[in-house]
Image (tube, rainbow, N blue to C red; front, side, top):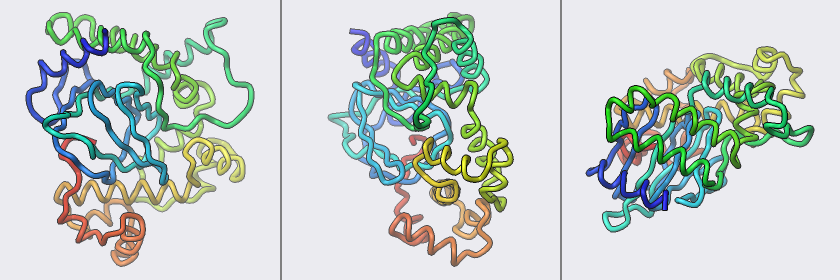
Length: 297
């Protein structure tokens, strides 16, 4: 019943396509009624919860389709392709974007790790990926509903918004995506820190040795752990982040050469070759198709 309440709440508040602020920082409602093929995007740490319809994302060649049965949890900046291929006026996509605040998530993750018996820390095995689908459980559903219900009162939103958001974060950390989130925000979050560092320096030359040194690892250990967390090698990841960021800038109106320079490409011809190899179109041809739905990623 809580999911039905969530759907009704969003239907009542969002009357046209696009994003709507809720009054709680980092929490937005959205509605899409247009079928949009997957196009390049970059997900920052975020949770995407769908209450009606389906959304699609492609990460490292793997296709993820999710709906009200699973929410997407991205705990690190990730280069993806995302779209709404099944959305229509008769079957609108309705959902919630929740940005994950690094400071608050880190505080909660460390508190959970220090609380006796709160969680079982994985002793061995691969690092959980930073991009995962998690089942809706009662704790997540109830916390999300309690958070969005604040929108009926600006005073309640101002007073209780941060605490309700913290409650939702806690539900995420305890749920199916918990291992991934705790690894990204808690103790032992070297790969997440390396990606955060990298994401602000896409226009600079970077080597695996520099990335490994930044988090105090050998090149071999860093390469192995990075691939466990992202499924990509560090160099593949850097290239995907640069090209996806450039594609978004081009879709926003930037020229091809400007976008290439913004993400660190000195040679426009090299940028065009790598762009076409990844997306199947030259950047100029792709810019005319404008496949990204403004404001919805």
